[in-house]
Amino acid sequence: MRTAVVIPAVNEAEAIVRVLAEMPAGLADELFVIDGGSSDGTPAIARGCGATVIPQEGRGYGAACLTGARAASADILVFLDGDYSDPPSQICRLLEPLRRQSADLVLGSRELGHMAPRAIPTHARMGNRIAAWLCRLLYGLTISDLPSFKAIRRSDLLALEIRDLRYGWTAEMIARAAVRGLRIREVPVDYRVRIGRSKVSSTLRGSVLAGLGILRALVLTRIERA
View 1 (cartoon, rainbow, N blue to C red):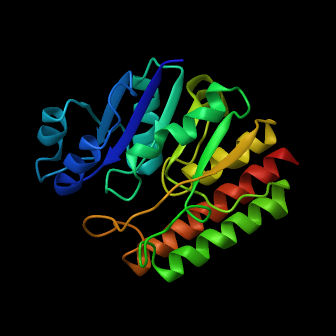
View 2: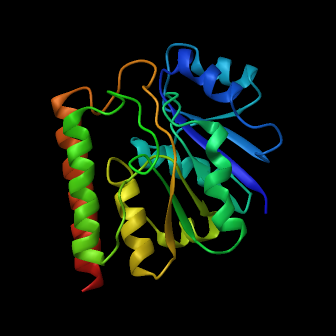
View 3: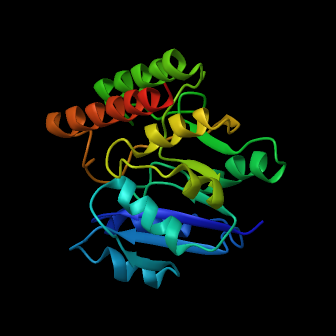
């Protein structure tokens, strides 16, 4: 099964070169960096490292992911952040359950793997745990994380028709997958201190908006199901 790796990035010039350098040789049939309007040379650096750079369509994290999904032709999509926090060397952990056909959506759980000290601010980690608890309450789904590092078949992702193209993208993906009966599995992955400043969790406004987006996505998907 052919694999496409999709990496959303905005002003990640320092990080993206290290992310792409760690990409396992021969793993990705398609390697996309989705640029959200960088002004620091990120696109040129990514091209120099062998990635295909595509301008993001629309605004938000989910819009970047969807841009990559639409551009890809591979069977499997792998999403990871371009800030060096997700180790590309561990992509194989996510691909294995899909290739063995024992899962449809694979989440790289930072909580089950090794998380570097201070890699996630305390308030962001607590918010993530609350979101995981809501997944159990609303969908009967026992997970530990709503991560950026995940893998899914392209056909399954596009069939989910995710509406939230900003902060709630991952939450809605998981919720809709649960509603449609997709097999969701977690695998442990490591999580490193990102390079540069987070565009979400480093500010109160970003953290609040992200939290509200996740809550909205989980609740609205549950209401639709009812």
